[in-house]
Length: 468
Figure (cartoon, one colour):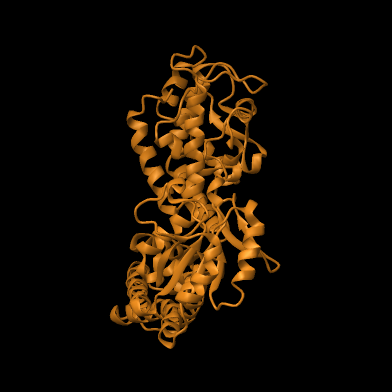
């Protein structure tokens, strides 16, 4: 919405937008040619086919966001991470195609590796340069559109603050209209109240206001309709800002279904390319770790078998994606197997722990078989930790929003665990804290957050006193 509200059409902006789509394929293909040229490798037909295929994939995967506002407002680090992430997906597709067609042997490894390392750096530099050029074209005080807000609440004040911080949005906020007094609203010093709602139409005509954001609660829909009627004889652009801050939002975004606009208030963060990239990461990393740790897994299996009677692998019912029941795998660390209506949580000096099991749980080695769950698609490397079905049924009745954590695959580790929320939850407050971090993970997920959690998990395994 903001993109259409803010950015005025101009030939220079259109040219930059075209360049944003054309430059990535040109860099990908051109860099391959120059790499082969400088390394003295002939650019024969196989390289031409590879350059054409890579350029076609780049046109799809490396294009700028559809929203011009989203691209302009993206900071350097997220932009770079997004490009690197998509570049890795592109390389994965090329490798898969090369392997299946048996063409990979025709390429110089030195050329391909050099091209793989140099190209993302050039893509990031080009994207940053084009973004700054677009900002320079857009940030013109003389062309800033005048804005007012009909309704003063958390949503409208938040949007006004963001407009003020980003001059590249090309908007200038004149003030707010609301029927409540400044004292009742508790206005901050920077919020300017221009009048009451009946004064909006006259003010718009008198001052030539170009954009109006109506930010009234849904219960005042009749007032919204009346205000729309009063503004019909003006040329102002009018937008409705729902006060969604009254909801606990999970990945909120706007969209449409068969032409009907909808607002998503609670959704999984793993849609489209995000879901593909996360799944690809899970498969690659879990496969690699399983291969590297195979000798350790065999030693642990032998130790578990010799330490006490019972199976090596412990299977337990837990809730997975969308609350569907799954079975997760762990090395057995106790001398009992519990998976019924009541499952006592493990405590620090739990008598059920075996001698080997106590060591495994201390360093979370009992969780390693869950890498197989990841390969099966039942779990992810990072996500909310799955709880026993008995615990789920207990806490879903006690904690508001508890089941929302099942909007994504459960993880071997998660944001709650790296923030100290692991081990026994003897108090309701302990589980509430864990759920708080789980929902925060859903709200703020990004590839960089997953990487951060994995790194912190590795560091915590060495000195975590709550691992038992």
